[in-house]
Amino acid sequence: MKQSEQADEQVVLDMPVGSVSEDSVSPSGPSRLSKMAASAGDKADPNGLNGVHLLKSPLEIYQETGVLVQEVDEGQPCLSCRDKCSGFSPHMWRTICNNCKCPREAHDVCHEEFVNVCDRIGFQPSPEPSRHPISKEKTLSIGYSWVPPGLSNEKIEEYFSQLPNHLVPQLGTPGEKYRDRQLILQLPKQDLAAAYCKFLEKDFVKNFEDFVNTRNEMALDIGYVKDHLEQDTECKRCSGDLSMGELCVVAPKLGEDVSFHPSCFFCTVCEELLVDLTYCILDGVLYCERHYAEQTKPRCSACDEVKFLPFL
Image: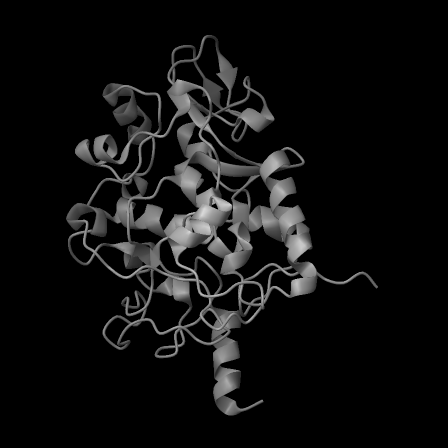
């Protein structure tokens, strides 16, 4: 292996996903949602390395799969190197920057448009009106990039008051950047649609589709905030008290009577708040999608794709 390749590999191994410090997610100016600036969207692998797809736009992939991902990464500044990096330039097969060798997630990767998490994961909204995602216009009008659906403005503020301030997705704050980052990390696009996989071999496309279908049916879901408890109970995570009348988070796949404090609704592995209340369940344990997938499949440390191994 050449010396430069060894250096690249060391960076990948030494800088795990989520290794950037909290301070590095502070906004360096007006946010994209605040300005709604137009920018080029992210596209599927232009070289068609896996032979599965041709060059397709995010909207074309959305039309085919129901999964909409519009991330902006090329040219984005590095949050670790700061001015030492001229902007993210994707490596051919590693998820690192050609310029500074830091991981893609160490850069200020963001979203071109307002993100509805149902669109990102390819889910139809819940049939219950109180759980329909709140519109872009209303969400932005009250000053956030996401709010839990089905709540009055007063209850929305009560919910956010129970989270650490720097994690609240208020426009123009570190919390907005935090949400953007967690959407990318917890719900990686290459786990959501084959069109975003560069190295998925043709022989394993069916395996990937089976994995997605099984995950979506058995494990993946979106929680919701119940605005008041009808009786005293305890938090599933910390076993602390939840009193009658308090609001709580519910994960329907665990049962409607299972409740969490808002700040306790986090992934068991990375311990990050589950972005937009999107979670997976495995053996009664909460995970983000990334770490759920890693409980069932190996993930390549270089390209960050889950791998489907042939039966021996």
